[in-house]
Amino acid sequence: MLSPRFLLLRSAASLTTRSFRTGGVLMHGKAPDMVEGNPLLHVSNVRNKLREIVGASTNWSDHQQAMAERVSLSSMLAKSQNDLPAKRMKDSYQEVHLPLGSEPQLREKYLTFHNTVRFGRILEDLDSLAVLISYSHTYNEALKRSPLSIVTALVDKIDMRQHIIYPDCDIKFTGHVTWVGKTSIEAKMHMSQFRDGAYAPVLDATFVMVARDPENKRAAFVNPLKPEGPEDEKLFQEGEANKSRRVDLSTASLLKVAPTDEERKIVHSLFLNTLDTKTVSFRSRVLPPNSVWMEDAKLKGLEICHPQERNIFNRIFGGFLMRKAYELGWANACSYGGCRPSLVAVDDILFQKPVEIGSLLLLSSQVCYTQGKHIQVRVHSEVFDPLTRQHNTTNVFHFTFVSDRDVPNIIPNTYGESMLYLDGKRHFNQTVEN
Ligand SMILES: CCCCCCCCCCCCCC(=O)SCCNC(=O)CCNC(=O)[C@H](O)C(C)(C)COP(=O)(O)OP(=O)(O)OC[C@H]1O[C@@H](n2cnc3c(N)ncnc32)[C@H](O)[C@@H]1OP(=O)(O)O
Image (cartoon, rainbow, N blue to C red; front, side):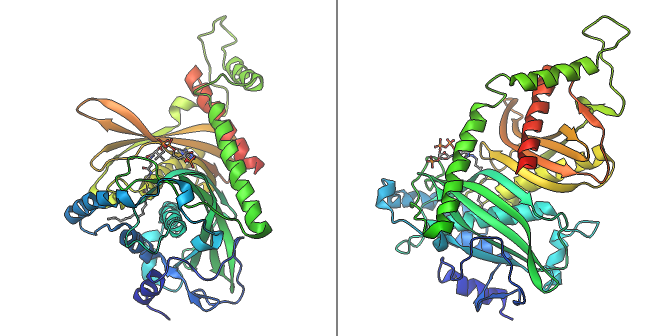
């Protein structure tokens, strides 16, 4: 078998990967570390490769210096998107191997107490891979370092194709760019696991990445994308549709406009169900049977953002934020449902603002909608500045879990909670519909 070091050398030689397939991956009978004669990139080399691409160092003090030096790369940025050559989808195709089965020493980092795979770790790997895919798309062989800072703007969707991820079977990630705007990139990734002699799909993920200048201050142009053939065309059209859907969702946000007629009726009926029939008052509220007030379905956490969790641009790594939010959301769903829930979907994780190193990050998880066995959880994260006492939202995360039994109904009490409930319902319906 090839050593991880050899894999790094082979893959660093070229950012383009040779074999290419766009759909879910199924490779019956192939050895997990070779695809059509090509070695897969080992997961532990993805970050090293990213460091190389942007010129980041592994040491915190040198790293700050290295980042300061990146400023000079601004002159390498394209003045317009037309100045950049169009790339094909296969130019950004990547395959990354997480050999949990064949390298047992890797397992510790990925293992839960219950001998399943920590999904938070998978989120971190997906985030790093999405960045690598984006750099592969924007690769310019004339440059030693990329002038672009590519950051995660949105996790549009992660759909679980199966609930169990086995801790002792090899995992493979594949993915490539499927759509680009002027400065944004959509990357689709698939994860599959080797079991009973074949790779079977585990999840499909869609991320949106944004290219910025070397200082991560302004947007920067990315190469256009040239779809080749009907399969590429279809993916590109889906990317266009995703962009329009995001604009529509943002326009209809309950933070901007009133709920629809149907939603208003739902809120009013929830309100009527909680009125105390013995008093004629709008204020006497009684919790219906088998229900929980939203106020009592929260879980909070704090992270001090140490340099160890930095990304290649001296901010907190998006994957780390997702892992922390996911674990808090899972614990919240677990305590709410009274059993260990499984993840059904992740959608619309918005990275609104970068998190600076040294920040105090407050994470707040809320069960916001329930239906049968399903629990919809929203995690909100904000940076708190103890000197100015200002709070700034950095991220919002949405997770759908399923329990092994019916869970109590979640009931909003205030108008704000009712909006959270409706927002949770919208996210849940979107997950169920797709
Ligand atoms: C030493 C190293 C250590 C080891 C390394 C380990 C880690 C390795 C891994 C490294 C991992 C590194 C990775 C990390 O860890 S990145 C860390 C996590 N992410 C962040 O911190 C990002 C925080 N957010 C922001 O900075 C801003 O909100 C951004 C920059 C995202 C947008 O800012 P702003 O809104 O002002 O931008 P704009 O108006 O100029 O628009 C620009 C473009 O962006 C598109 N857009 C914007 N928002 C969205 C959205 N929600 N959905 C879809 N698209 C969106 C927009 O349509 C436009 O596209 P186009 O029309 O031009 O095409």
